[in-house]
Length: 302
Image 1 (cartoon, one colour):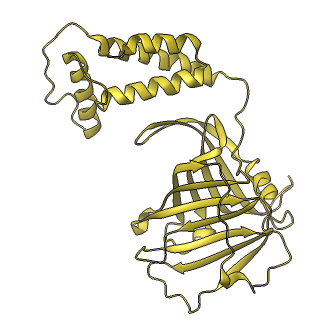
Image 2 (cartoon, helix red, strand yellow):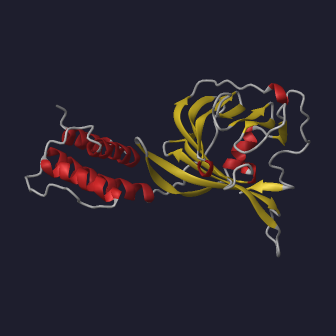
Image 3 (cartoon, rainbow, N blue to C red):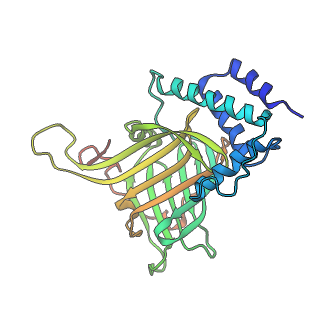
């Protein structure tokens, strides 16, 4: 059997802080989810106690017989110490992490959630040479079905199905204006760094949390400015790769069909190969406005 104490000690001797933190969290997660054998009663008690603390009844039903700590308890103790050291190293880092950035070519899959409507549907986001396409739902039984497409420097959106909304037949395609991948990433580059976070899902993920806003009104500093926030996005990107998005929460007028105005993108599968991007037939003859989507004379990213 693998000696996990020795494995951790070897890893800790040569790891950077971020690697050590990720490795330690993964091992703790595996231990407490019983993916590694719990060879001693003390570790079993600890795992059970943590589960009960989550459900609101700390320690209920825990066997309190005391036995000498075994190897799993030793590894948990070592890992806890490592987390504190690694976290302190990360927090004290002088450099600001890189902001979110959408790559030119990729294939991502996950889920699209509209929580107040009880909607949870398949989602894909793909890139091909700077063209981008999001698709939520499908032309089947899904409660929602829409696509957003950045194609040849123009941004389009088509909604095929939405709860409680009777859409015209044929459904219209709306062109929102000019946009390039470079301008989109320029907007994301202005996002504010909120902090580093641990995402506890099916597996442990280390994320950098950024927030971006789009504001209508005056960009310059002056007395009595007129500014209205119209949309906001929270991006949770991998700490080792700002072009890998774990989660996106977006809120604002772009979600007008959702009563709460907030919708989630949860991404689970990532490929760096060229994606498939297709302009919907409904959009082929649509005229686009002359202005850019992020027109600095109208509204701006911040």
